[in-house]
Length: 439
Image 1 (cartoon, helix red, strand yellow):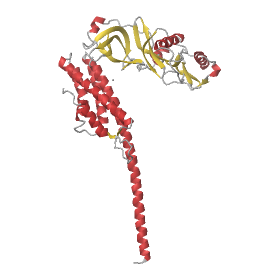
Image 2 (tube, one colour):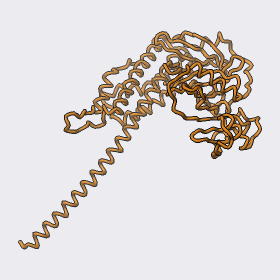
Image 3 (cartoon, helix red, strand yellow):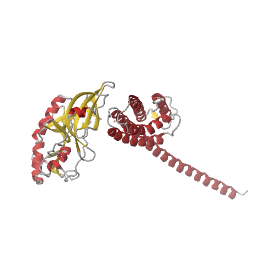
Image 4 (tube, one colour):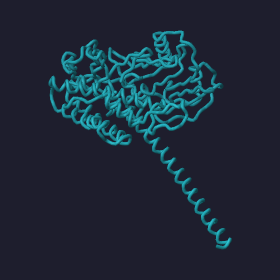
């Protein structure tokens, strides 16, 4: 064979090798990119699964204290929706098999069973026990899925086993193996979840709290803002007007921002970020200072309800209170630094949107009659009157029953409508070292 023929063959083979190498690299890059996208999608599914399972657990916990079918029906619909979302996420993480069959069955039946119970005027002792057993299972499931998610983010669990030859490298546990362990831990279930309550009250389209106020100029608003912040008007910079929910004049000084209503010139929000040092005042003192600040800004008759502390800043929820009735839609949040005692954040949007003089319904049920709608599983500790916002935008005049579940050592707030005697809302009270919240 001639030398030129050898050269042609070698050249041809070289081209083929280069082409194959390039193709391998391209497909390798594509495969790696696909792997990254798949991992990101699984990560999102795992985070959402943990969140939804926790929400199912909270809803089932509340269902234990439902006494009327209508309230249980609402809870059943919510559980039905949450279960569908959880199943979608679970399917993206692992196919249904012998290890996940129990969890899939639980998610399929929990909403249906709650809706079935809602058709009954009163639950039997057996049905109450079954509902309690479902809650016990969901509580275990919530903890295990939460731990699974934590393990993934800590690097202890991987969707694919870690590889490497280094002797000191810690190999991550395969996700499916860990999930199967989770299923075995929680076992089978018997056959057949801050802020204070109503902090996310429905915001009316019209700002009722300032509807009768006169409009001020931007210069007048700046003067008001400067007085609140303890500076001169020339120290403040004009910001673009905020008109998303409430028409406001906005100003700033460095990283401090403040919003004043165009109608009435009232303080709507303020942020004063600062690095807090070690706490020097108590939470009780923080509540008092927050209350004093409210009065200074013209917000009278405000009663504190719940609070939380984070990074030595105490955020207190205040609601309007008159004649012994708390109006939870009229909410103001005040954050006080526990080192200086100064107000570092303020939000009166709920109050300004909802506050007005309400007319008391003419025909209301007595407390004695409303008390009968509270679950027998609860011991009533205290009773008060409250008006709570509803998803429809309306409000409900209620008796607020502060209760104790001795069996689970938990505290619950039950709201019974004074016109119908129905349960309107159920809140779980959560006590922490750094605050009192609801769920």
